[in-house]
Amino acid sequence: MQAARMTLLLSALAAIAAAAGCSPADNDAANGAAPGAALEEQGYQLAPELTGVAPVGPDGRIMLSGQAGPAAVVRLATPAGEAVFATADRRGAWRVAVPGAAAPRLFSLSMSDNGRIVQAMGYLFVTPDGVVARLRAGGGSEVLAAKPGMAALALDYDSRQAATMSGVAAAGEAESLRVDGVERGQATTDASGRFVLPVSEPLSAGSHDFDLAGAKSEVRFSAAIDTPRPLASQPFAVSQLPQGWRVDWLTPGGGEQTTLVFDALAPAT
Image: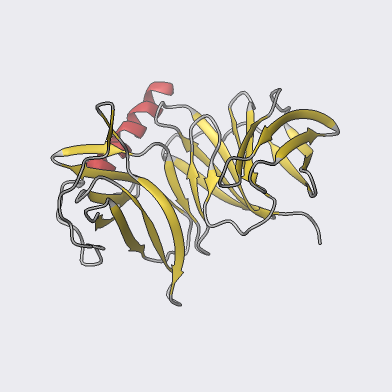
């Protein structure tokens, strides 16, 4: 079964990367694609990144923007092979409008730079109402365009129920997490106000009460934890929750991971 899942994943990734060197589509965001200094750090070519999200008009389109190699062709593609393209400008900035859809989608982000294809880590999860999250293997998934203030945004866990919570609060603020009344970890937000908080022990299957506390605010909510769904015929599965979305997905290493993407669980007012 594991070999079959790996074959499925590799096939999906091959389909995603197959057209990375093709010409950009009509909605490319070319911004004077002149060559510039390569995004390299000690000989390592940096992967493309998504940095911004904004809605575009009433048709459900979503504008995505980010950084890549100068003049690189950036590609966002679904496992089914649907793709949109952008061309980075001389500073590496790119943007592209993703068409609206009735169902959540998973995108792979890659770039073709001087004949070399570079894949970003993880995947982009895009909901019909414009929520975009970067799913990260091992935990620390990040929901973009979060509103200011303290919020729990995502909870990742694997087949052993090892879990990680991520969210936002004031920059430099210490956050502590209690699960079912027992302290399970602490973290400090970075300069941008984001935190990643590994839960100290695996969570048992079933519903749990979470209490995330900062210096001035507190977020309380409940969430059900169970084994990631088997993905025998597809690289991901999505279901809607009362407080957001559940995504079961295959990581690039072939492991199964579940990410709960919350609708900005924030302190009660």
